[in-house]
Image (cartoon, rainbow, N blue to C red):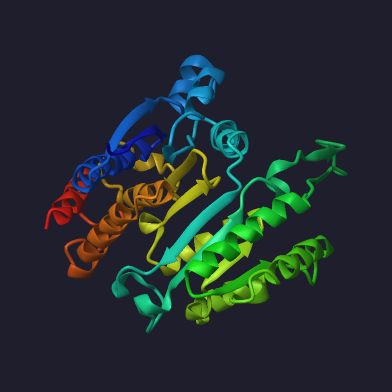
Length: 351
């Protein structure tokens, strides 16, 4: 009997529900074609829900989420709240509560015309960033001194643990072994002495992967090389903060946020998949947002489930649409309504 996956759907704020609706549409079709089941569980959490109830994710709902196979997350953020308030209450609750220690970001050029870099083709931009997702400055408390005075200062620790570093580096080596067998550690060890721990663990674990070539790069140099020579990267492992920065740069060289998908993963457990763009509240309800990143995030979730043929089918459909010119732009200027783009992916799956 075929497997049925239970998938949480958390559309969130702004354009989030619109793009996630198209991802669900595609998942329903591809699951039927590939012979497995998909059951969707909707959650209302986001700004509107918080306005009504004052809650982020209640404990009862969080316990239910822990029993699911995966979660699709649209986007969190609303101008009625200060930056980070909703994100910390919902996104960080999921990442830390579910111990999603891998933030996985494929940076892949699907069509040459999307790339802003001169002369770069799809073969030149195909890398995988494994970002540590539960430590660093994102997960420590700020310490304010003399707040509100001319002498105010604040500090927030970039805290790393051996356990946290070991597991993301080992995961990255495993992924590199599946790809082109090259892994780059991105850090700032020349200026941040705490990154010596990353370097030592990288070398220790690397000895167990003699088939994987390894090198290191400072984060500032990495940003330059991603623009100048993106073909030089295969798999990257890095800290939470640096991973956040370089994957946005990666999104731009692959064509923009409208095509960039990501996963928050704990191997073997319920994990969360999302387009990496924001909630873009000014476009809410206008059907201008491109849902391809959300659709590709659904494909990443299927790969996490072990449904590789279904994941490949989604990526192939998106690639064909982009290369054929039927979707010439992935921005809000495409002229193609959000739901029509989802329909086009479904039609391509049927070819």
